[in-house]
Length: 205
Image (cartoon, rainbow, N blue to C red; front, side, top):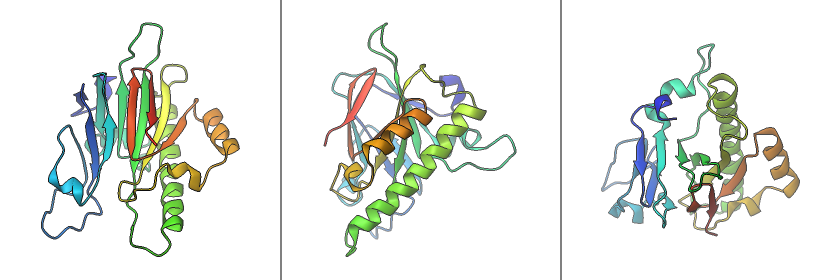
């Protein structure tokens, strides 16, 4: 899998995924875009990240899609709507299959009078991107293959401390339809993800 992606990082510890695209802080101005690090930063108090908790030290490859533009472009040259990054584990047991997570972070104004509507809008936007990118990686890039990994779509809205967000939108029938159409993919809408082992992750809320 490593050969497909440039500038990938491998973590055996917990780590953080941030998207500063919509960051408008006055005192600190980090580089625009996505950052994946294993160190907690003071700016997280103001602009929270998605937290990936890795208590058992599972090796996880991460690839920032901003650094991999070829993985976001169709064969006809058009650009696909893509997620922020992907994370791929190494399975903990020879009989298990590793997990493969497409990760999408959204910004939502917590001060708005209609926070719930903003959350729903962000979730819909995230699902659209995840569908597009999953299809591209499967149908044109040949990276996603049913049965090769256990697929997850992770949606985080770090600026809103009200997960799990799935309760705002999706029925069990909808989740089942997504799974059937997208190679068994499971949606996790949370701001903190627990790596259970090399073959499973889950939201902590």
